[in-house]
Image (cartoon, rainbow, N blue to C red; front, side, top):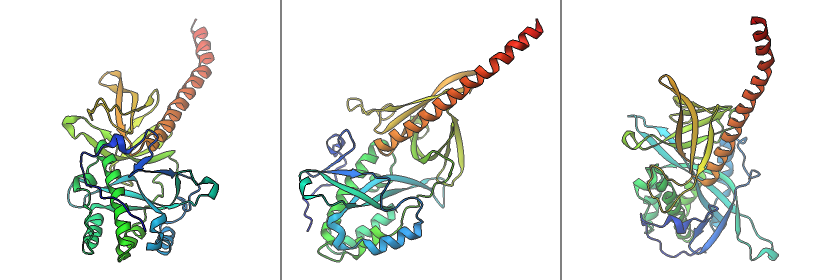
Length: 331
């Protein structure tokens, strides 16, 4: 049976001590290396219905000791009654990969089975069922589960994963049905919005302190255009041309806690844009959910900008002889 020490729901939990530089989560004295493997049991090509059927047949209370709950992202949805955004949390369900006897000293590795997507009301419903059985570990606050600021995302990851560890340990000796149902339902739809896109997903964009701070939107990178939508399959809000642009990662500086200039998992895109009657260099600041997601965005955006630059050079080289001939004719 799993046993865990008590952990308080502390808003001032140290993110620096909770995460290492390579984004490995340090969890109560044990280090879990998470295997992000493209050959996971389930892939994007498998339908949501197929994942749902598999989920319902796999996770039981007997699987809790070998199951790892990892918070891997967030999603945004339009509110039915107003213009506010509703945030959901994406959770990866992972299974422990047994180690060979000769690898007894190596750290645990996990392989993803599927992902689920949960809103705040889903966490509240689960918590009420757990507390009815005597569970006394606090649920992370509504602010932690619904706010999209960069520093809050890290605290959400830490507190939710500790909460699920406690919940699985508790229900393994009581009625586990509510926990199993939670892990087996609301399978995350990973079908891409644009099949031609090299990458798409949620990013938080900094809009300025006086006009809303950070806002999460759904971004789609296709060629040299980075389009952003209110949500997946939602309203197109705008696009950024990456021609003559560049991108670089923003590394978190613990000595500078100012969220307007410093954030974890950040990236900055610099492009030339027409402002009035002149072209100006413009910077856009973004925040991804993890360093791994940020690095993938940086890699693909950098590839797109360099590809556009190479095409421009080739076009100029092709047009130069023609321009020279036209100049000779005018003479």
